[in-house]
Length: 310
Image (cartoon, rainbow, N blue to C red; front, side, top):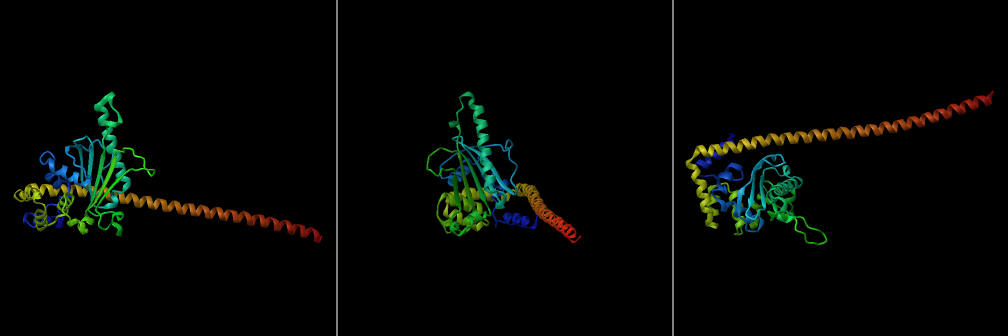
């Protein structure tokens, strides 16, 4: 472990810090739907604004997409009505731009289509498909979330609409949660279910948890479950090790992506220079042709003058 992570581990074991719940191993321990089905259901319900029930966790193995750079959490669940929700927590905002969000949503839609069509067989219709929710939680938000006009807005909902106002049921919806904006927002102190969950995810110290339980007594069970890991240091070490392994692995992917970007920029710059040189060569060739034409005209005039002088 790095010194930072050693300190975080020791501070948790000493009872002063919380577990970092935005990292996959810790989150899944306290939100496992097989053990605590109501917790993940409540979190997703508070984000999308509709009461839902998580039915099961789905495998990510059949995804057509690669793992996300600097991924902290990636959990895919099927809800009771058959709809699908994908929850992502991202550390660096520009590794999960809108374009990537669109691809993830499309991947969810195709996976649902394949599964439902296989189950329904010849009776399948497109009305059998349900909404897919792509939920991206940023520890550090992209610049688009950090404008003055959005300084107090930490939940953004998006869906496809038509500029003419026609109503068609399209099945892809997007939610962006900005944890850094939440921590600074004056509305973070409002008492509601969404703020309870976001306060838990952003809690750093035991004092933060005490304030959370004071506002939301029903959070006490989760805080108690977290504190019980103090009596199982081997399990905590395993969770920290797994979180670091995932972080290291995805850091490598991130570095490869960044080097690829630098290479592409260098190739593009060389192409621009080659194009500029080719353009210059073309101009020079034209000027040389013009000069050759003038030289030929001069030579013709000299010959004509020489003939007249004879």
